Image (cartoon, rainbow, N blue to C red; front, side, top):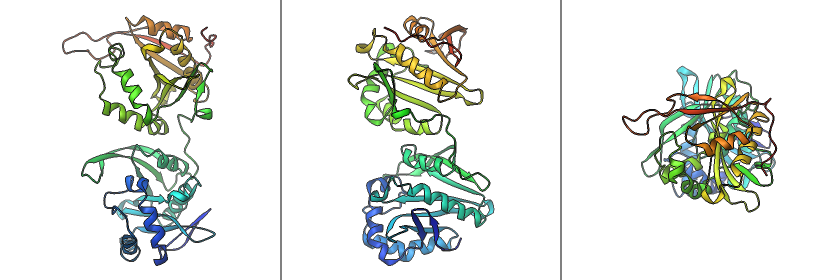
Length: 377
């Protein structure tokens, strides 16, 4: 590519200039940009670092076959971010696309407009494949990827290097030259108004702040006993689950919910829709409640809400659940929520301990054509 100006809706992409230094330093030193950018980024990022980038770093990126653009406001020409191409592999027609946006310019669609425009220019220059490598804890960038026509492809294990020397996974989002630039359809849409509710229970997306309540729930002995392997999760496991819940939703793997008392907003349990068979239009649900919330019909209400959303806006053809043969309480919930008992799947689950028999599972299902029962009284 050559350093030409590229129009991108509310912004333009142009080469960096010396008078961009102060805005560049302020934007690069933002905690969010420092967290989600490579370990080689200076911290703190000073005006001197900005001048080095403008005079040395960006020109080197161009010489290597990549690109390094300043993102500037179309009206004022003031810098609001940066974008570029790196890790160029000419023999494969491949490169990695990256961007950052200053805090004062976020939530204006700048990242999406930039990514679309830079991708179009890269394909016009002859590239065949672009990658966005994003941490699972960065759902904002994953939403940009979806909006700019990038598809989730998989996980690059330990591909990222943190400042302390530890490594982390990166999700690969990919767009090919012949992919349409339109937003990628999602398997799991966002919730209407951010929640599902029947005015008694509310389901909302699990968030990092829910980790303490979720850990308390999933370390209770009776809840541990219903896990696929009856081993309690660590707090780190739960912290990770909450941190990547939005990413799991965006990539279509699972919709993880906090189950809340609608009157108080307090989290009293959890439930999830695991999209285990996208090709056949099926997904599995699971649910559990804290002791203080049991016996009030809240689990039944939550399952009804979740099944209605899954068979409605999500468009699934079948929702299924499995319960332990001894878990009659869970079976009553499914029955009251309108699920049909299909039978027993023999020896479906792994043995709880070495040498023990594999447990059976009672299989339940709900179809879009099944009648929804009245809410529990």
